[in-house]
Length: 320
Image 1: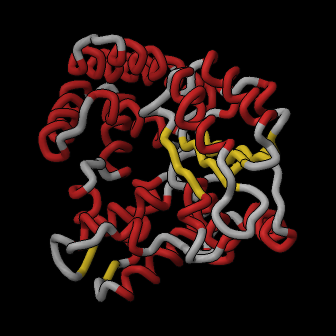
Image 2: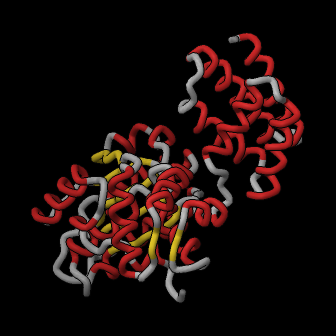
Image 3: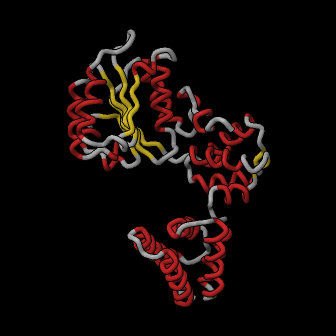
């Protein structure tokens, strides 16, 4: 495999982007009028923010000129005020290439910019609006200062629906001559969590193991435990079978190579599918939050996970 499938199958037109119909329709109207305000794309990873920005530039400027009038920067790499005062400012105040009224600067992961850099950016956006438009992309719009948000039209990208991801995955699998089973598709939906980029990358990794991709192949390729295994781990704990639950934990850690944080997050995802009282779910989630915080802060994964299983065992007695 000499190509990364995420880039190979990146949509080139706004109409080809899946799962964000309302947003793409508004962006197409900007292309039609040949004008747009500053834009802020907010949403989780893999939902089409970067693809939308590039597709917008392609359609607005055409294939021959879009690279000359579109500057992409990752704000997490260069996040200080000097970048805004030099690179961004220099590009913003230069004339466009060709017969176009403005250029576009795309700042990916703009929520990584420091407050000082954002303040400087606010002034740059205001001063050079005649020659340049900004598209800011972020995971957390709350980290973007209000003066910038008020200058932008905000677009909120939702995680993609399961049917949209499945349709795109089937299309790519067909073009790459690989076969994916129905449980393989379900595994991709579970692993990706609405992130199409992650789903496509996982599909490519799974394809290395053979032309037929199954759920088991994908779980192992992505180092993700099966939902049924996580459910069994919780069930054994709640039933008071602590030693068996501990053995199941060992199996997950060894077979899948998961970290403590991975297991905590998968338990959190699985708890809401269990047939247990809501009060118990509330209790478990509160305890999961504490365990994750301790692991992130540097506590021993094994001790925290076994402590969590022990708590589930005590809670099982409490709610019987």
